[in-house]
Image (cartoon, rainbow, N blue to C red; front, side, top):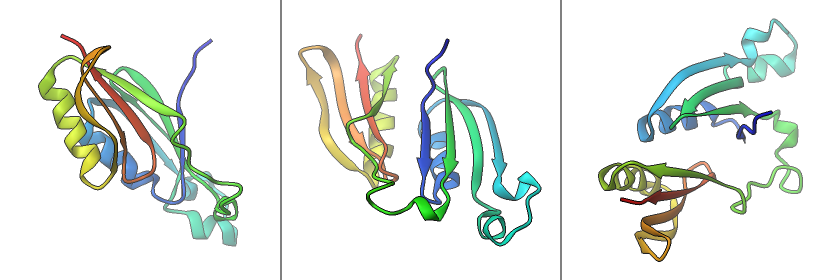
Amino acid sequence: MMLQPFITFQGQANEAINFYEAVFQVTNKEIMRWGDSGSSNAESEKMKDKVLHAKMTICGTEVMFSDTNPDFHEPEVFAPSCFVSLAVTFESEEKIRSAYDKLAENGVVLMELGPQFFANMYAWVQDPFGVTWQLTYNS
């Protein structure tokens, strides 16, 4: 049994994947687009360049990604939540500062990077795609 994060986007999965690749240590990237599915209807034509299913390993954990069908984009159906976060533990102060700066650049800082009673450095950031990240470093 294994728990895997699966992040769903409203058409920005490709941009998010590229962004996370620039922020974190990433390996094993695989992307399948809607156009690769072999379906040829009006809906799949509209979605052909969007991500049907992707996965990559971020800091040792496999994370999956997808773009949703635009029919799901109604606010009551598709509402990103800051109550679920991805937590990353870093090996150095330099690495946590780098990730924090990149995530915060066009994101929203929910908690500034700084010392906490439970960590040498901690921050909570919502990235430009609405995903929240809790970053921790302990020496």
